[in-house]
Length: 339
Image (cartoon, rainbow, N blue to C red; front, side, top):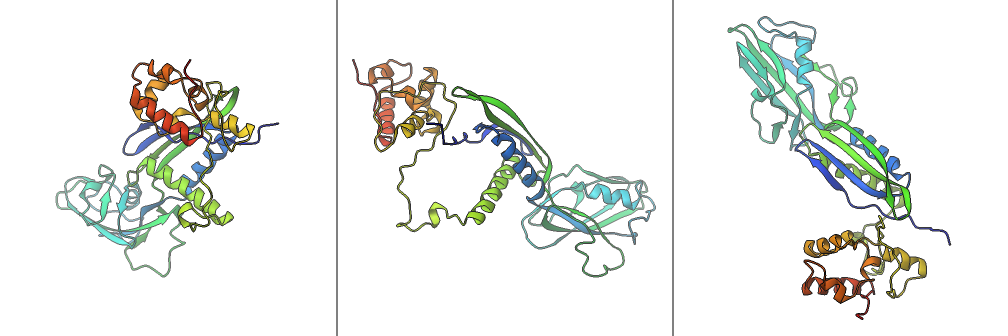
């Protein structure tokens, strides 16, 4: 009989992580699923994550964006472009005003904005302008709002703004860049399974891992809406299915054939069960490490060992043996009989 099940990938693996950047890998994806999932995630990360942006501003002495200011090195248009590079995080869902007032001479950066509760400047070193005259003041007031994606200033213009108010295009996305790579990897005898690597950088208002996890939640929510699915918590007790489903994880480096009996599973399900990886189970780190050093990586490889064999492993004691036997019993499996 031909194989009819699509194995599940391993959990998200953190390769590198800083406050604003992260590299993550997902192993064991079914052939072709690397690009399927990677492209979907990239598009959602770029377009669908909420963020904070400047929507309008006022600069003292400037009636429009093409004005110039005495004692200021930059013209108003350049100041606006620099302001759009400043990124914020904001707790409030409503619009918030933020002010900056500096007397020269000197360099003006985003760190000089007034402190307002619930608002944080995540790029405080961003250059805004330079005051060249000691008698010159630079007074700026900006309006911040939360949103998604890119919104042109023409789209949120409800009425003619007051004189001196300059509307700007809003770039709400908290993502600076995101890309993905897909590589082939071995799972069992096949070498065409996918490894998905995602490289993500944010503006600091959200962590890279949060951005990735939120995008996955968006995909799940969209699919659930289409299929009218219910989560386990939403199901009534009488609706909950029997908990006898075994999730199969791949990368089968051990022979999945063992001397164990699996109840309530047909031969194909039995083979899939024995392919379950040790590192996907809830073993303690000590037990998992001892098994891994002995190249025991699947349930199929584990059930070929006897209790005596396991106790001979370095770092594997009686408590580890009890842990293994208890876990195997949940799958209706047992170790090989001692000789």
